[in-house]
Image (cartoon, rainbow, N blue to C red; front, top):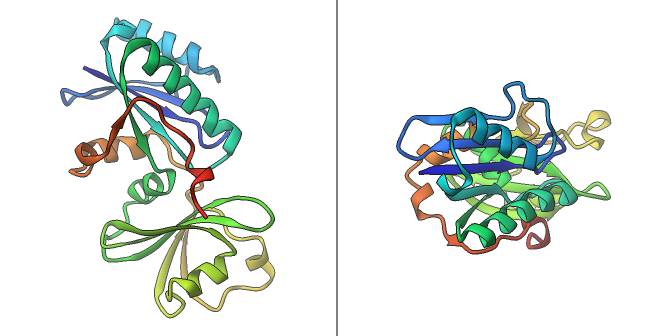
Length: 211
């Protein structure tokens, strides 16, 4: 069975075909095809691997948070194919994908961040290998609400612009990763938690559910 992997939570759309039997990615759009259209990426991947759309048994799509319009594009593509082919969808959280890709120690206090609007950020607070909280707001306020202001923090994602002039009164180590890549999905698919994720008929963006 092939899994179709879709990542569009930033403007650099990516698509992959992953062999669920264990051989990993058999096609990755980030390795030289050059197209930015999901339909063309899928056609190229199926052609290069000698597969057919009927060989796709599951779709894994990034639900964000991230760019809402771009995230919706990937989800709409996933939903359309899932409906047409009666395929289940697995939704992936972009903040969790970033933490997986960064390879942080599970015991670290990790904040994964994506920019929102008006100086707000989507933040995911991770410890013990799990997400403790997802929130939208001003970073300083959310960190204090989480009572993490005295912790040694790892920040994954774009720096808040205000911190360039006024560094935060937190002990923060920065990781420059801005968004997940297909490498993050490889780690997710190999994790024990992947099989526990819900399989759904249709997905929706996380941007609209985080407050």
